[in-house]
Image 1 (tube, helix red, strand yellow):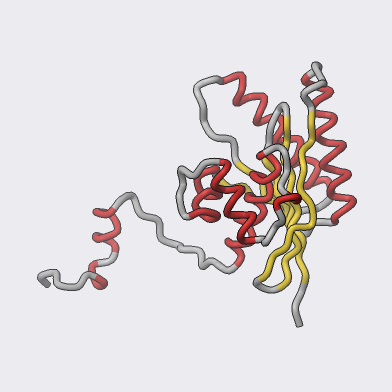
Image 2 (cartoon, helix red, strand yellow):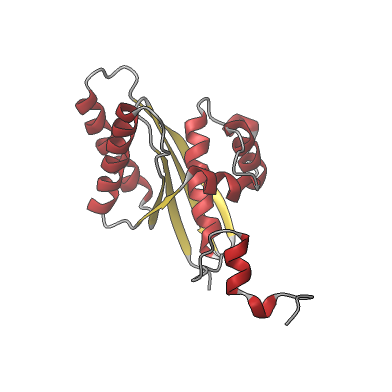
Length: 189
């Protein structure tokens, strides 16, 4: 018996926050919705945060996600931008936690790698790959890439569901070789 799971993906932003909702049945995923929370007309930063909380809560109430996946902020040089982005991410997380929705965070590079196979992929490459993977019609593609980025976060989380988690971490090839002596072929013993 297949069980259904709904995953909400969030691409945090201070002007536009993307969201994407996936329905997962077994090993198949389909898009339910994607869009943006547009805060460009709101000048008060605290009202923007309130709008994020209200809209994310409405999206949770509408789609009843089982889990939320959110993109982790990347570290930039502008501390003020990082602070604002972290606040918007925190408010979205608070909305999910307030509805008992488990939250999973993914680095931008990991999301791009899961979708395209390249950690340095462009937003356009991510959107095009999602369009193919989810068989989306061109008319379904959004105006703003923040929406496809959010759908990418949800799809990355979907992909992680079946991926084995390694208990061992490596700090480069030398560390890998040292920890896996028995797996090396052609090495002197």
